[in-house]
Structures are given as structure tokens and as C-alpha cells.
Image 1: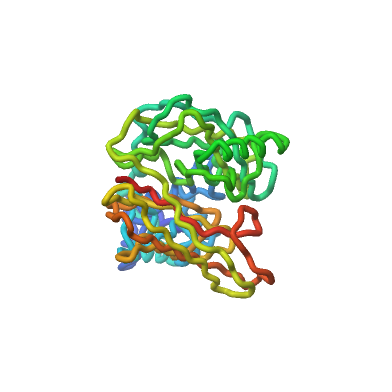
Image 2: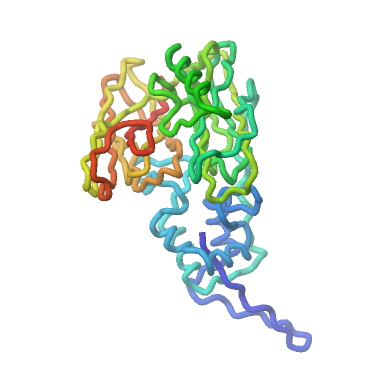
Length: 406
């Protein structure tokens, strides 16, 4: 993101120090204003760490000043390309916990500072970065991709690594993904396998492809998977809502999918691991419930649409949706998820490289028999042939995973 110019230094006249004039009325300053916005929304990726995912840092005034002078910060912010958080959080369609959605005031402050005099302000007003997020209370097992992996495809390599079964049935109540190399790990998804056939398929794919793991752009297998957890830059430990958890089949293998992006690589390998927090039982069993749209997209259409719906099964008379993750491929532009009574998710923008799980500030109550509708939009302007559902780069998907409990 972009930002700042240094305030005039104190001038000394004899023994009397003359203070600089106050900033122009309404002109924002870095310390205490812009600094807070960057700390809350940007520095998780735009950090001073050599392993940061973003190509430049915003961790200090000097960093922000350099970005303001050399990066298209105002454009990225005003177009909501940055922060890469696309769930509309203006109150018209749910509210979200841990969101990176810039409110109008913060956006105006940041853009005004970038396009203004880049005032530094008083360092005494500096605000600390956010406190670390809560971590897991215990770790039952650490899943390991098993190798120091170097991406084989540039710029985007989707690699699936099959990991051993847990050996005992449990309920997943928390995960903490540790990317081994943050400059290339763009997102991580942990999958369960729905059947022995799905397990046999991923093992066969792994055996057929040389090197560690196998290529899996659309997912580990088409024979049935369950999304258990996901990680994207900015996330730390993920704790499932209190009293809920996802059942884990202790006899079946798991799959870790890692999306590697080499745009800002430091040239080093990756060895991502995932810590699992589990319980022997939970008050309310949860699951990731997929809602799919019918993908049959006409060529040359700048706003092709895929739609679908799911009638909620009779898991209980009422249930609660705690959050969701949307998935499309590279032609996606926006998407929406609704019930017959309310809006669940309004993705005002879509970027294939920034996929998040969006947790609600408060769960949404639903009932058995309710219908969840999904609508995905795509830009087909440059396509001369129809595009259908599929796992490949040239295909498309329209699917949302809902975290639902009783």
C-alpha cells in the first residue's frame, strides 16, 4: 500500500527550539492515524520480515513513505484490490469477524495521506501493532508435507501432499497452519476424503506423478473431499466456534493442498506444517457443507452467470452458519450467497490469488428445508468457446463451503 513525506525538522534559533507549524486542517498524519490503518490491515503481509509475502514493507514510516512515492497505493485501496478482502462488510450483507474491510473513514484517511503531503506527525502518538491472535490450547498432531519442496510451475503451482491418517476418530476444533516459506505459500487447504475410492484415487495420482506430491489445481480428487480448514495470508490459528467441531475419520488419509506463487520468491524451499487441535466429543457437530452453481458459461459474455442452490438437510430442526469460503477460478469477478430470507455473502470482487474463509461476527440461524442460493459471475469476454465445470486451469468452478453446526 502507499504512503508519507517527512515533516520539516525542528529548527533551532539560539537556545529556543521552534516547533514546526501544525499540519493543514484535515490533513492526516502517519503516527497514530495512517499507522493504525496499516497495522490493522496491511503489515501482516507487508511486513519487515524477509519472508513476507508482499513485495514491499509498510511496517514503518520510512517504508510507508517509500510506498507512497513508488507504489499505486491509492488506486489499489480505492478499487478494493488492497487489502484483499472482498466480502462486503458495510452492513448490508452480514458483518464479519477479523475483517480487513476498510470503512469509508479509514479509506478516506489513507487515500488523503497518500495523495497529500505525507505528513509524519508526532512519534509519541505511535500505536502498537495488533496483539497476537489466540493460539491453539493444545496440539494433538502436526501434519507435515514431508519434504522441502521447490515449486515446479511458475507463477502458480498447486501441489497436493497425502499425509497419514490420525489412527483414531476425533473432532477437529482448531488448526494452525505454519507456512515454511511465506514468500511463496499463497494459501493452504486441508482436505478429508469422503470414501475409500477417493483415498485410492489420491494415492494413485501421487504415485503416477514424479517428485513429491502431485499437481491439483482444482482439488485433490473429483471422487469426494471435505474441506476441513484453510489458511490465507493474514490468518493465524483458527479456532472453531465454541462447542463445535468437525468429525475426523481416524482411518482415512488426509490431503494438504498448497498454492505456491513464485512472483516474490526468495528462492528458498517450503515445508509447510499444520497443527491440529482436537476433541473426543463436541456439543454440536459441524461440517463444511458445499453449495454448487451450474457452470455452463457462454463465450464473449462479459458477465456470464452460474447459479445453483442447496436445500439444507434435516440435520436438526435449526442450525447455525458460522462462516463460508467461496471458490471460483481465474475468470471469476464477483459472487453472492443468499437464503430465501437474507443475504449471507456479497463478494463485491474476486481475485483467484486471494481466497479467504469469512467468519461471521454472529452466526446465522437456518432451518432444515431452507434453500441456500449461489450466484457466481465471470468475465468471458476473451473466450471463444463455452467453459464448463472442471478442475483444470481452463475450466471453472462455482462453489461455496459453509461451516454449519447444529
